[in-house]
Length: 53
Figure (cartoon, one colour):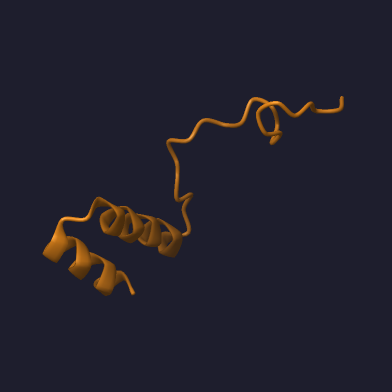
């Protein structure tokens, strides 16, 4: 599957195919697929939802 996503990216230049390839590599390595994401300050609640103390 990784080879397929890379091939699609190489042939089309589609950024979504590259991002999928990159995410698959992270998951394969056992890492977080989105390491740049900031932790959720609300503790997991969506915007507009309240968090019970």
